[in-house]
Amino acid sequence: MSITVENKTCTYCGICADICPMGIIHSPTEAEIPFVADSQVEWCISCGQCSAFCPSGALKLQKDRDISPESAWKGIEFTQDLLVSYLKSRRSIRNFKSEPVSIETIEAMLDAARYAPSGGNGQQVQWLVIHDPEKVNKIADAVIEWMRTLAGGNHPMSRHVPNLIAGWDAGNDPICRNAPHLLIPHIPENNPVAEIDGIIALAHVDIAAPAFGVGTCWGGFVAMATKGSKKVCELFDLPAGRKPSYALMFGYPKYRPVYIPTRNKAVNIWQ
Ligand SMILES: Cc1cc2nc3c(=O)[nH]c(=O)nc-3n(C[C@H](O)[C@H](O)[C@H](O)COP(=O)(O)O)c2cc1C
Image 1 (cartoon, rainbow, N blue to C red):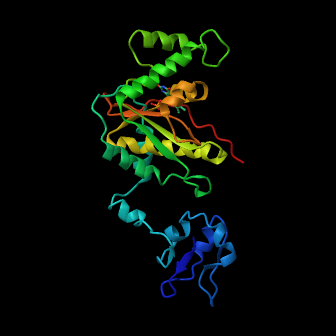
Image 2 (image 1 turned 30 degrees about the vertical axis):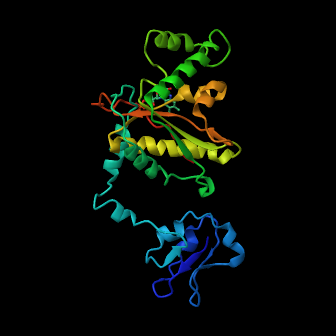
Image 3 (image 1 turned 120 degrees about the horizontal axis):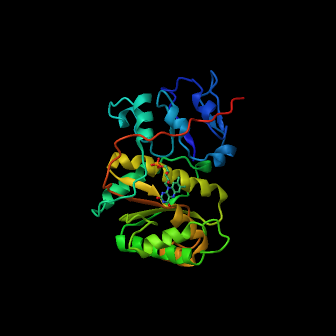
């Protein structure tokens, strides 16, 4: 990937060179607009920062550029207050309506998550959407089956499983909370950077979901079972060379939070 800089519109501000994470854009001089040396083109990670921050729009990656953030916001001012309140209002949802979330809505949420950061702009995260509630239930059943093997053992979960199994046997679903859908980011098997990319992308879906009227709950039990249960992984049936990163239950919330619960104060070390 390389850049093109329009001679006439470039203001020679040098921001592109300043912000390039790979340091391959040469600062403009009086005689020369910013450029990437041919020998360094291969280092470009196509993150698009140079193009996104170019104040005059002179610099383009040889790739389409989306519209500016301001026009995407359609005149809404993202005040600090609004955004912080939104983040504080996000809650886990554990009771869902049976009404399904449409494929279009899910695709729109996943589309937003494409813009999550990823190590080296690797964009390695792909999605498994378990849309069929019966399959979600089958996965919960397989997680419980795995938990039955842990009871009385030394696994960190062993202490908790009797309660969860008892809940399941009584006809409840403490694993997937009877959510209609389950979302699994999946990543390449042998890419340590992608491990965190999957979690970050899922966090972006989690944060975006309330804007679509969708409620979410992180599926810690499901995620744990993917490390211990062959059956759960087989049910995911991911393409060869891919592994699940985490799990998120989602659907339309049955109840809505009325208050924001208290949280511990932030503990900060300043240096
Ligand atoms: C990594 C992770 C795993 C979680 N796993 C589960 C889970 O398996 N089941 C569940 O009901 N909630 C799960 N949660 C939700 C937490 O219990 C919840 O985030 C926490 O109690 C704070 O509540 P809030 O999300 O409403 O602020 C998980 C959350 C995280 C971040």
